[in-house]
Length: 140
Image 1 (tube, rainbow, N blue to C red):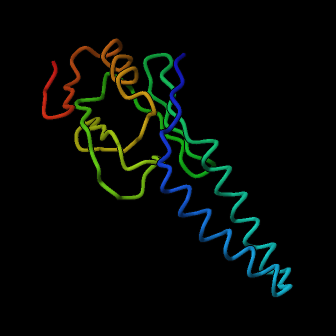
Image 2 (tube, helix red, strand yellow; image 1 turned 120 degrees about the vertical axis):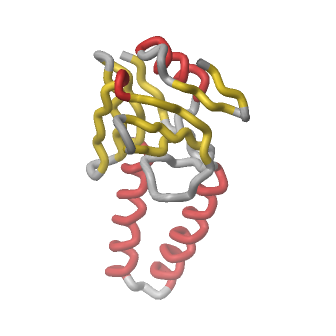
């Protein structure tokens, strides 16, 4: 079993901290404890999502996990192509430095493993047929 943590963009953390931190401070200053509690729960939920976003390669399958909402298992033999992407569409990725995985016939998913090279090597080890397109190079 190999586990890959999601890369997290620092600017994303700072942005969320600024927004939610400001709302929490303002709610506390106004003594709006209901609003404070709701925002605090949102912050806890976001922290939970950050801590439970990862990718596991085990038993010839890629498992993509993001909190309680996203749990996908893909047969590695079904992966056709892995390529770099900066697509901002919602996905189980905490960075815009992403990999797009094309699997089955037309299915895709975006992920952001911290160690992309090790991740790609693990995929290639399980499926040597997968096409890898990184930095304008195509590896076969």
